[in-house]
Length: 207
View 1 (cartoon, rainbow, N blue to C red):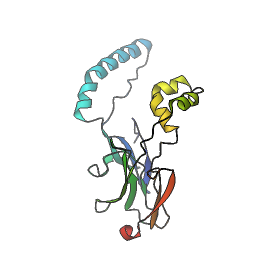
View 2 (view 1 turned 60 degrees about the vertical axis):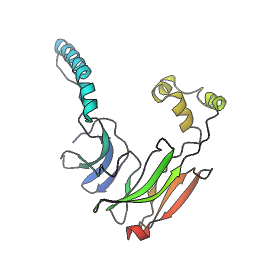
View 3 (view 1 turned 180 degrees about the vertical axis):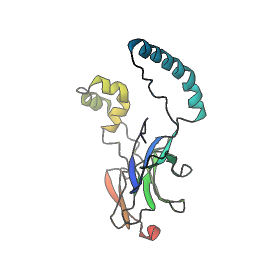
View 4 (view 1 turned 45 degrees about the horizontal axis):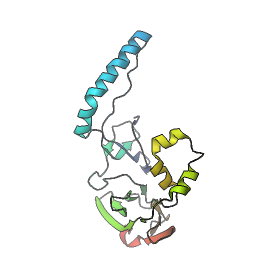
């Protein structure tokens, strides 16, 4: 099975499958033809098909992303707890108890990130906390100096504001990770005013 599209964070679910953030529907792949004339015709047909189908597909939700369970035997991927795992994050499975998944979220409009566990046997979610990002703004003068040596093509793709924010030190994803026995997890955060590593006891939940 070959996955295409905007694929993101993943981890091994077990020895036969992985869980990864990616598109739920199938995207239009490039037509391939042999010979110049047919290749040119295929390109025209593909462009027309995309122009007509793209709005329809977008409205249908086929391009929506989700966590996917991807079997290594070539079977089609399936959405992985889409009602619980509604946004991209940084997933990992407990080293000692593989039914437990640790994950986080990117900030919502209020700047809040959530840290949580999911029991993938029962489908239960256990929140470990919500952490709000700092309201500090990037210094424009310093950001301009930092971008002076950056390839302009990179800035066109990412955008100057986002690039400045991610390189400013104000950007801090939780990036949670397990202790090997599953009794604790750690995460990064700026919610108290400085970048720190925090520890959360999870023994009472996982055990």
